[in-house]
Image 1 (tube, rainbow, N blue to C red):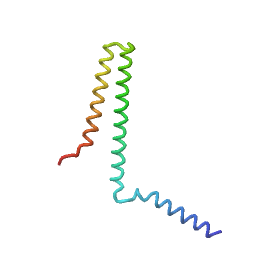
Image 2 (cartoon, one colour):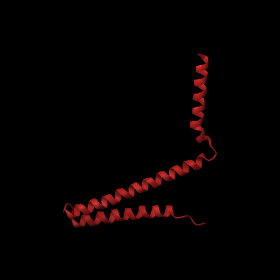
Image 3 (cartoon, one colour):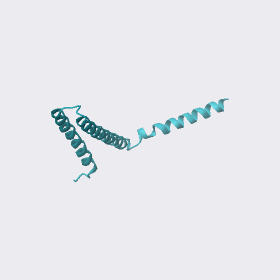
Image 4 (cartoon, rainbow, N blue to C red):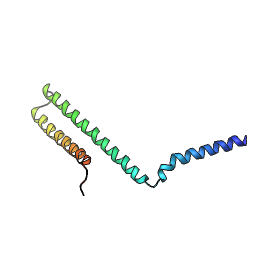
Length: 99
């Protein structure tokens, strides 16, 4: 009975050490930075897709006369500016930084 308890405890400690070992690794900070950058890039891609979908919806609303020409132009300009800003940010991140 005691052997089973000791074995279970040893396995539990080994698994716990394995799970938490990345937190104590020398380059854990670099790993976290990479994860953060990846998350930010994914967020930018998501925002870009939402803005492009909004532009398409806006075009559909214009074609079906659900929105006035004045409102259409204002919203189109705003959404286009957002899309350009997001795409420039994505392009800047992709280009290698020059020293």
